[in-house]
Amino acid sequence: MESRLILLGLLSAGPGHGYDLKRSWDHWFAASKPLAYGQVYATLARLVRDGLITQIETEPGAGPERKRYEVTDAGRQSVEQWLLTPVAPAGDVQADIFAKTVIALMLDDDAGRLLDLQRAEHMARMRELTRLKQDGDLRTVLLADHALFHIEADLRWMETTAARLGELRAEVRS
Image (tube, rainbow, N blue to C red; front, side):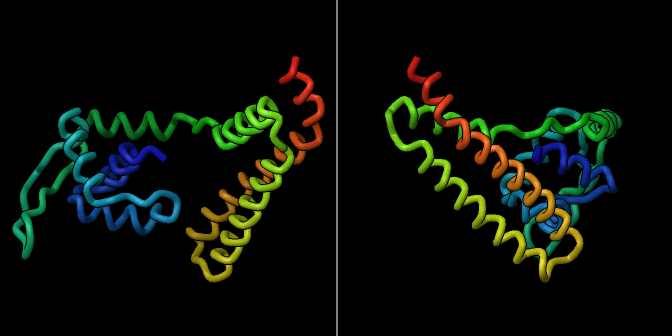
């Protein structure tokens, strides 16, 4: 998740300040990727610097003053381009597991054990996500389903890799 563009997208819905953006983020995306207030304000500063948003007013409050921002034309174009750009399928989890498997084979370690440990970790996460779905609202259920489908694909990949460990071992040792 690219927090910069998501915050810009949230702000595209209408002017707001950092506190508004943080609340919206927490409502919609915190389950996938927590975001600290400091990250929100640092990102807002970069968006201003890059000409994607502009400060329109400062609101007095009980605490620090709140700066209200709105998206510029360049910011709207950036959001539009982002929305129309497909997300590349993530392959990094398998790449990490593959790297560990190859290294284990190079070190004559038990790569099958490594895959079993990883499989157990994935299964534990599946159980956790399934529990979340039971009492979750639609947003939680959809995010959990997305994660579950990815975990299922990872598990299939691990099963296929485990079945081919002999071939991979021979290739690593050659």
